[in-house]
Amino acid sequence: MKVETDAILVCSSCGVEGEHELLYLSDHLRASRCRNCGSTLRFSEHVYAEYAWDVAGRTARLPGKFLGDVFKGPRWVVTWPAKALRKPFSILREISQVTAFERRRRFRRVARRKDAAL
Image 1 (cartoon, one colour):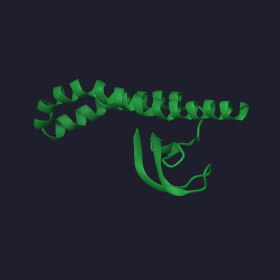
Image 2 (tube, one colour):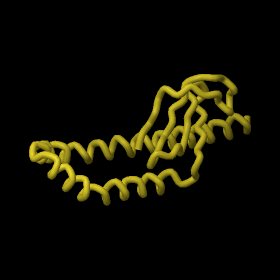
Image 3 (cartoon, helix red, strand yellow):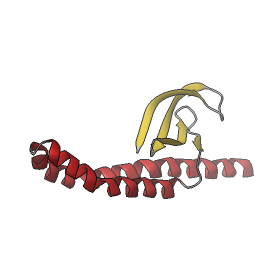
C-alpha cells in the first residue's frame, strides 16, 4: 500500500489543477483526493476488501522473503525482531490511511446532501 501526496492533476469536481493524494493498493490506483476541494474519487467500490487482499498477499509472501533474506546474510536475522515488533504499528497506520479516504468521502457526500436540502 502506498499513498502518494504530491501528484498534480486536474480535479473533476472543481476543475482546478492542483495537488492530489493518490491511494495505491497492490500497485494499482484505487482512489484520489483533491487537496483543493477535498473531493474523493474512488476507482473501486471495494477499497476495504482490496486492502484486505493486499495485506493477505503480502503476509503470504513473508515466509519466502524471510528465507531468502536469511540466505543473503545472517546479519539480517538480528534486525528481524525489531521489524516484527514495528509491523503492527505500520499496519495500523495503513488502515488509518485507507479509512481516511473513505471517511472524508462520506463526510463530503453528507455535507452536500445537507446543502441541497437547504
